[in-house]
Image (cartoon, rainbow, N blue to C red):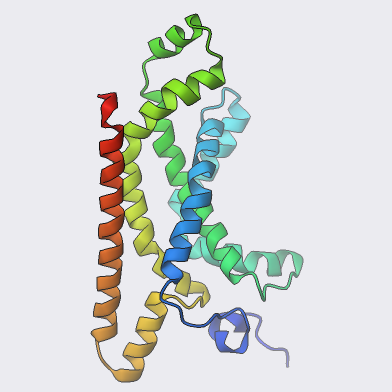
Length: 224
């Protein structure tokens, strides 16, 4: 009888990709997700605003799928997809799959935030920049983007805080992180203390993130 194909998910201890317990895993997931999703979101926003209906429609569909389906499901599709579609060995694909899944998901959310900021800008600024001899690229980078960043920072902050909590969803493909460790200890010791400790960790993490984002908002306040 053949072994069940989903055994890596239910028996992670039999595979090398189940990494040792490290409390810093949420921080690593958080950092790499932002590193890739923020620029990806801007590219998706440009595609979404394209004058080409086909291009715009493709990115509109992408955003709809990413925002309309659970992140946990997306992580599973990204992780198991290469195996079922191409027969690839997914032994070392767990962590890259997590970052890929998170980046694709949050890139869609950031894209709509970017788009809302860009379309809110007064067209007169584009015309004035053109009269001053700025190219379209220079206009966007030097004039439009700084103002857009200021306007969208509150919305970006909300998504970043949500990301901190969503890092716990990595457990859905048996990746060992803070929440996974808390569940294991709670089950072994029959106590709620690990969950309380995990909650305190996520709260402090979110508090620091909110504080940093507030500093950024103050830094860009000179645009008012």
